[in-house]
Amino acid sequence: MGQLIRRCRELVGYVWSKLVRVPYWTDVRWISNSPAARLVILIPLVGYWIILNNHVVEFTRLSRELVGHDPPGDPWRLFATYFGLCGVAVASALYQIYCPNEVKAFPSASAYVAGYFSDISGIEMRRVDLAVENGDQESQRMYALTQEQLARATDSLDDLERRRANVKRNTLQIHYDLWNRSNASVRRAMAVLYRLGFLALAVPSIDIFIRVSRALAKSVLGLV
Image (tube, rainbow, N blue to C red; front, side, top):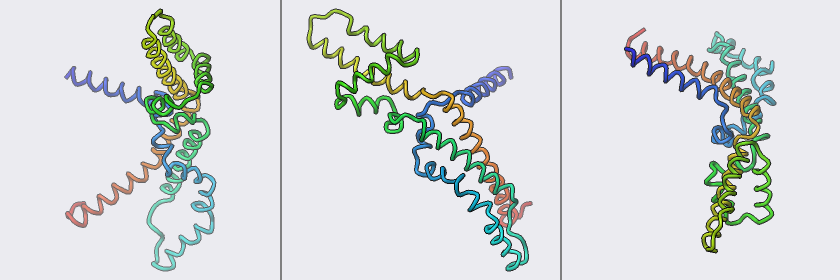
């Protein structure tokens, strides 16, 4: 019993740590880079006209005139869906505005290094060096450790070239990681909006699923 309680506590702690952790840009990249998330950005702009406009409400009244009763469903589902989409839209807009282009273009540091290692110019590489050298404490620490490889004496030109290539590769990875953890406050706000938005969207979906399941059980299985 004590072991079960301990495992439950560990599970709760793990889930809680995931919920409160500020996600990196790459954590939400697969959502925010999708065409659906980009289209959802338009919801706050056209949502009132489409969903809450009085003309649309008038069309729903045709149900009473044609079939003698109001359309099924409660208004709260409509509002939950609308505000859920608005939350996702604002979070997606924050991603499009503040997420660095390096993260938008490459899903990981290894892909970024592979894409730029051979073709990056000396001037661009110098800009990368300056960016990580003057970045946050983590990038400065990692950059200093990387540069120590070049400080060691060697008589072999091949060894020196291998060191330079390794330093270049590591510096590009540090550069990607630096951008991946940039704008922490924006990433925190984006995570909250995504979670609230998807939660608001999930509530009416779960409600409809329960209703459909009950109706199926009642009609097919003869259960209440």
